[in-house]
Image 1 (spheres, rainbow, N blue to C red):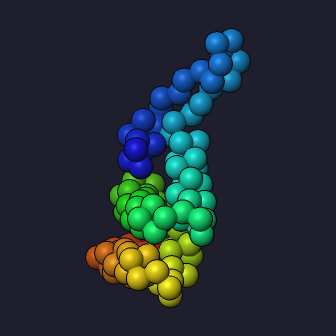
Image 2: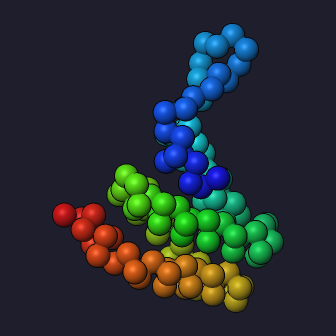
Length: 116
């Protein structure tokens, strides 16, 4: 699902039966997925396993974003969301955050070039 927005960017579908408004898969779906992952990961009431899945989903989102059309704002938002989890009192959450940030190290060159 995280990869769909980049592969379906020219696809849209009606939001209602009147056809007055369309849902744009290229832009809106990416924003919706990102919002859901960030919101769910930050909810303390969520089980740790759910938060771990969201952290890894966010990491995948960075990879997908850098592969296609890098969005610096989105990448910064995602990494700023993951960073505080590195000090989580829940070991599984902290480990996922650290591992996901470590998984981004092969993208170091691409990430540093975003600032230029």
